[in-house]
Image 1 (spheres, helix red, strand yellow):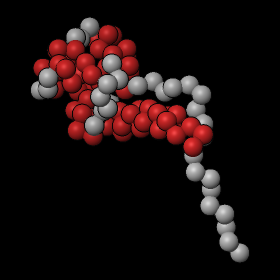
Image 2 (cartoon, helix red, strand yellow; image 1 turned 180 degrees about the vertical axis):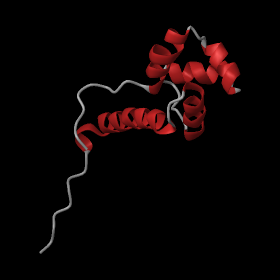
Image 3 (cartoon, rainbow, N blue to C red; image 1 turned 60 degrees about the vertical axis):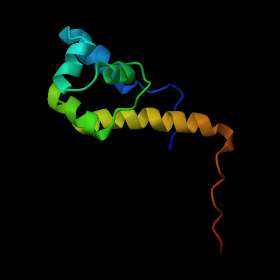
Length: 98
């Protein structure tokens, strides 16, 4: 894995800045459309909840994107956070024998 210096854009930031704001849609309107609680959408937008596979499918159907787009964005954030957490405690590569 290559080291990232900049934190990836979260799926919530993408959802808010690239979809909701340009469409003039509120979090409540999206939540109602998706059949979920507005708290779920708010937590995603604020980076407190990850985008699940189910939510990725719902978002892709709603916005004409694909589920992989949302999951890839989430995975980039998750990998960045994991690398940051591990930091210098990363295990050394195993040495080849013989």
